[in-house]
Image 1 (cartoon, rainbow, N blue to C red):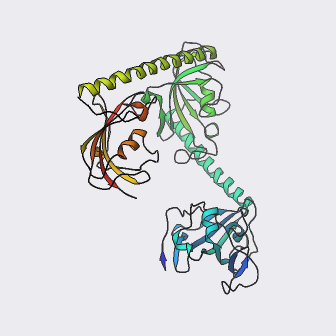
Image 2 (cartoon, helix red, strand yellow):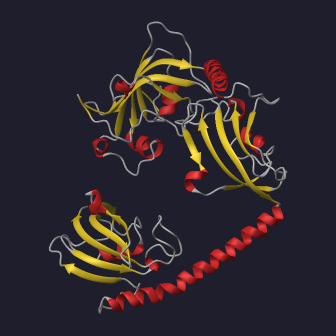
Image 3 (cartoon, one colour):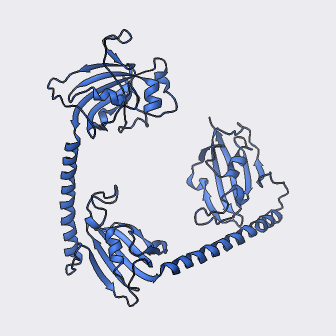
Length: 444
């Protein structure tokens, strides 16, 4: 039996279908219900345990045709699937409710319903079109009830909390042995006294800070970006511990906040970053404070200045582009969109067309020659679907004018590039751009 495990057929599938009735002539030996066929092999050691709301199935599952497996969970251990009510008659969720803990079964579902309704795929895979049937092979190892799940989670959280508490105390003993906890468990260790006014609820504080776990992994640091944050005092920002500590600071003060798990991310943690109840360390400097009215006035002034700067860049663009065209003796006329297409090598292969995959090598610069990107540097051509708005407008237009093997220089006014927005550190608003492009391949 060959196995064809597709990338989309992930272990976290929400599945559907199978049912009772008399034996069917269409699938001898199977019973039928709601258009789906099933054969259940009861457990040799039945528990009579069935799933209900909040339960989780732990099972082995594979599915495909009688001679080809499309998905097989065997290499991934037991799948864990939440109990769900049937979305339609004869779906996999209804099928699974027919099983008791320890049962095995074969279900034959309607392929079009499973793939297009349950899996929400645009069409039925070719393998299943002929018979419109998908065979499921299921071994239900265990049903975990909502109550059991709660007990398991509580035990796990208690373990996380115990370990986090020990790590928190060890960190304090090693780094801040004389620090005193506040009533809520927060530690605020002042490293540089401030002499300005104390932060007041509702005011806006301009703050530099870093945040790390207790092992020293830094998640964020305004000093690296050189962009301090404006934070409203008293409004929750990042964590309860940070919000509370900031409200106690004076202008000019620098402090370390050691935040216990309850005041950090609690029992949620943050996958890949912080375990439940894990503590955090902040370094904080309060640069200045201002009232809400002052802050809003400053923001309004900033927006007005940015708008003026944008308008200036917008007016400069036409002159910048005209000067480049004149100085480089470019005599071709632009297209209606403003694109300048200068063919360097005429392609002899397939014509690029909307809807086709294309591979393109390119080098992008500002008109003054400042580079901002190059696929040549990565030695990997860029692949995209032409005309699908996966690239800037000028690219869709220019590449459609080329054949495989062709090379061109294209000059794009900002209206068919990035317009009024920046892109990366080099491309400013209203920047005309130049690309050297080479059409490597036109696919399907």
